[in-house]
Length: 135
Ligand code: SF4
Ligand code: SF4
Image (cartoon, rainbow, N blue to C red; front, top):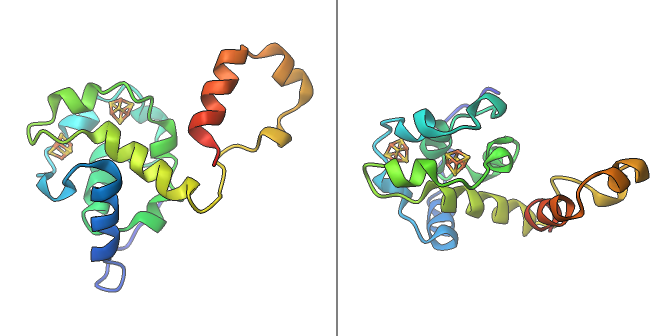
């Protein structure tokens, strides 16, 4: 995924919105990449947690909505406990998901899942997925 940062794409409003949604101050990030090093899901992500933090510092929430990173985040908090700036990155990932879900967009469509797949998957996994990935 190619993301270009220009003066036009920087949104102070979006930075403030994300800080309010997450309860964190993303401006504190110093781009050390410890979060990426700790994350067990980076192989599945199209943008690393460090890159996501870099882009949220420019308020590029809409562009990040096209990334799979916040959806692949397992909310394990490994990044959070090691961040030297004390940022709860898992909360930032949750805020990014909320930003998308509040526009009534789903990451998965329950109605599009094949009936046989629904029958074979653990029900608790489906419930957890629907709570995390649907608006
Ligand atoms: S560990 Fe913290 S300070 Fe370092 S890049 Fe990640 S969010 Fe930023
Ligand atoms: S909370 Fe998410 S971003 Fe942080 S280490 Fe776990 S999977 Fe990676």
